Amino acid sequence: MIDKFQRVAVIGAGTMGNGIAHVFAQFGYSVNLIDISEAALQHGLSVISRNMDRQVKKEKITETDKAASLARINPITDLKEGVSGCDLVIEAATENKNLKLNIFKDIDSFAPEHAILATNTSSISITEIAAATQRKSQVIGMHFMNPVPMMKLVEVINGYDTSKGVTADILALSEDLGKVPVPVNDYPGFVANRILMPMINEAIYTHFEGVAGVEEIDTVMKLGMAHPMGPLELADFIGLDVCLAILNVLYEGFGNPKYAPCPLLKNMVASGHLGRKTGRGFYTYGE
Image (cartoon, rainbow, N blue to C red; front, side, top):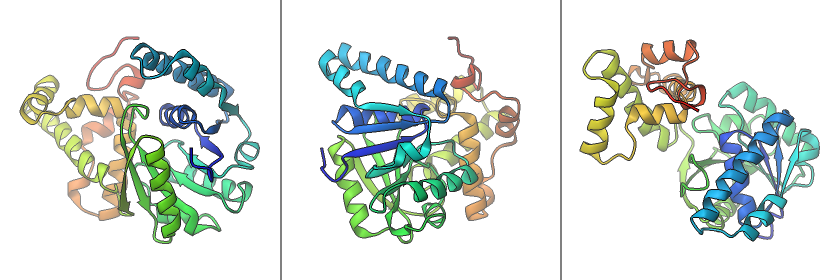
């Protein structure tokens, strides 16, 4: 454990937030898991517990490790209480720019002056988020991949004003968590989603235009390109609403028609068919 990060706060108990809290707790860090919903917090903790059960079954950790890790996670519904006294705050709320800007204004007011403020955003400008605070040099992106406990990559995104010292600290911290950090600069979509989302969008267009069915498109990419998941299955896994939000950021950021979201994706999101989390997307899912 890196001493300068004695206590960490994670904002948002959803898929990414609980995954980030899981990893920090597993590697010895005390974590305040913050969400305005008590129900969301309890659900997040139950997800962490189940995921740790899988690690125990695979002999990645022991039952003792699991108990110790869960004991390091403190669920909190009050933002001010949750970030006060923390050395690092990681925001993992919904991919909505206005929501994130408001959260960062608040945590800038409540967190200690020395604290680093990080966002798990997958596409929104770190520089713009930092501008909502009075500590622009201490704001950085930590884009974890889903599922967080399993995926090694962390995109470490430098805002325009992020200090070299903060970047170095976050790179070292990511390595301490068993991750492989990759530093990138702040442009729409960063690296991962600037490349991934146009591929997913093109797969949706390929289906929309009647070139091939959903399973056929995914089979071509899995067997022909050695992808572990087809692009449409992956879109369902990510969440079609998240895919649409990221494509909109790319389209607005670059102004290039190649990033324009497919009309089929827009319609599916408008209809509430968001993929795995709603039980229906390009595929239909049971419990």
